[in-house]
Image (cartoon, rainbow, N blue to C red; front, side, top):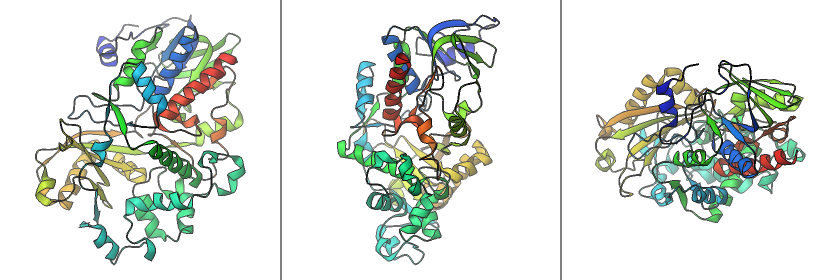
Length: 476
């Protein structure tokens, strides 16, 4: 197979990596002590730890870049992040890894908190908290009418979590509590309209509140509160978070093989053989899989997964999130006097100002984010139409923005072939039945990734899972 130079340059620019054509056109697989599938943060860390233990390691990645769901748009103002944004003070593994990788971190938490709070736009009208409290169409219970829609669901969960210890969220003993978040919110006195407004329009997990387990939500809430207790600082890589996985990959001694979607995994007497879509084959005694379930379900795995693991791979869903990145020719928010950030019950959903300029006052762009069913609605329209509708909606809500917005980028994690969504979430009944099987080894295959973790999320969860799977792999 001839090496496509353009793809080689795209996939390895700035990394110092080698895109290999190992095994292409040959029936003889290239052999290693261990193979890691997926060059996201979890897979890369697993590869580092395996190499430190003396093994020869190859990392096989479907994309033409490393990083997985860490995706920085380095060619746009403020290097906007389409995925992972920052690490809190409690991300001990992540902060330590950045230092070891030689990646400079900058504190960005103060930029998130700068300026006026996010504005509420309800039925086309900007409302202050006082105006929302008195609004005749505010559907919240009397004692909660002063709570803004984006605040309510998590406020109720924080005060009334169904479990005392959030780290026990996946314990089968809690199966009776593994109900939909919609049911939980109804138990707190919210009617259908209040649930729709406070959660379903912009769900953190699931397509809506009926689609996610209350225990999954309790896990997320507990983790966030635990992180906040560690401090309000947040850290990001200077110049973009993609620099962290790029630095990790550059430090590996073994092969980082990009642009190789996996088609099949076969276990045999010698370990496992990985066959890629282009026919290239790789063999190792040990195999670590960091791929999301949404990708793994499209791979033919021979004689490996238990019945429950196979069920989890097929049924656990991934979070729909679509993002429109806009820039403003002029700060129209100064003209209308409202905050640049918005929460709306309309098409534009959530607008987050990006303050990554020379000073925290400078807004380098607007991140417009849709989640759940709204994200799927955007995707169905297509990127160009969705971007145009986002701009038109903001201009309708804020006339001062007319002619000031430029649509610069659209990214859908659901439409990403190798992600299928932003992260795994568990539906009602799945948290206590399916989550616990995902980290179990299947023959010589070990599994890692945020979706396998019980007490950590985000980059911290991904790194914790890498440590676990390497210990399991070396001791097998």
